[in-house]
Image (cartoon, rainbow, N blue to C red; front, side, top):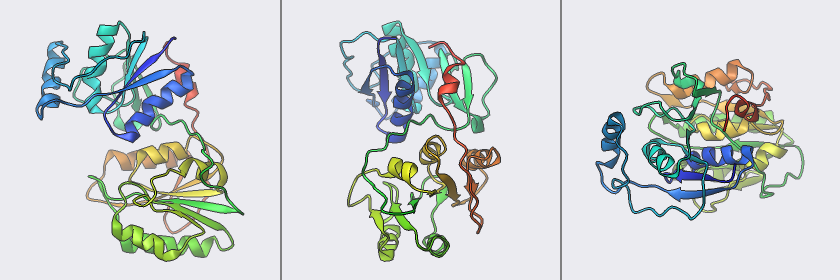
Length: 298
């Protein structure tokens, strides 16, 4: 395979999944941003897709890089229609990294997370988590035995309670006396929660609003255990696919049962992680995403 074209909707968690595929395939890639031109662009793509019509006019002016591509890859609903458009134009394979709900499942390959309960089709490959490829950067270097804490924030499903998080942090500090505790917040972390984190004066901390770096891969390489709040499937997927660290998810509050909770519980059932319930359990089974590529011809 010569080269892959990756379509980017501007969400890093989505882009990382597409890039991970290219990394596992060891194929060079180009990234092209695709953003809707009109507020009604995305809704119209569902209709055009059902009619089998393909056009670029709904998205902002895009210039294809001057390369030959054998595959067009996208993650996230803003990319799915354009994956089909460019795959046809380039005579390339169309590949998406999550179940493209609302669109026809006629892509060449669909990698679908098990918790989405996708239909059984030859072109759909079920995977236990988001595709992830972890590369430590040397941002964090542990000075002694260490544990990591990755703190997210509110999203459309989960709510983070500052009081509950404080109780969890207090437990972790008490349980891991003598360890270096490394903490990072994320783009979703509220100012109130970041202030709470700063009040502890951990051995190593990254407050993302002040310092936009990502030490998580280094946590996964060096820490004995990593705690991750349950709002990010991307962060959890990285944790269960790299290194030997134990993974513990700090559950957040939600109004009703949802696919994200099913995702976390399915990983716990298979021994990839432990959902914090007031106790600590060692769970460090890892997913080898490379094995899923052996099931398809790419």
